[in-house]
Length: 133
Image 1 (cartoon, rainbow, N blue to C red):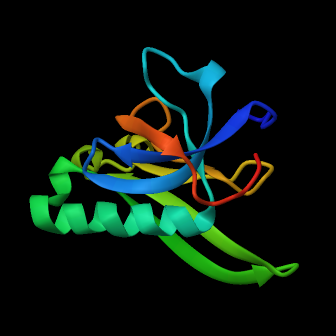
Image 2: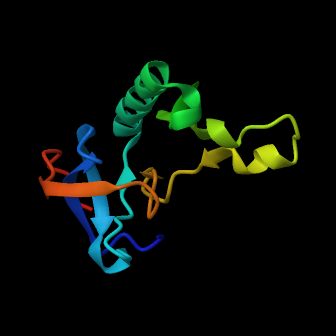
């Protein structure tokens, strides 16, 4: 989703369990009622904390967790690595683990695609972030 000109700032929930979070979505990219949201780093940190809490409460094999690894700043902007870990797919075979661990890269605007087209995101109105796409 490299073209951000069609993105709308919205508030969304994850399966009505987590959120609301501020996000940007491209309604034209929705497929089979699934949303493809992107988030700023601050919001990714909130989602990461929520997924890690869920893993502690419900067990790691029943969830995917996000992790934000901080690496200082570069040119005044925060440097971070965002990881998604699918614990149920983690195995003793390193070749299999390439599907269990994913590095999520930011787009040109520094936003991260989290659970796009896979997680049950639900739109809940306009965003409170006041940011333009």
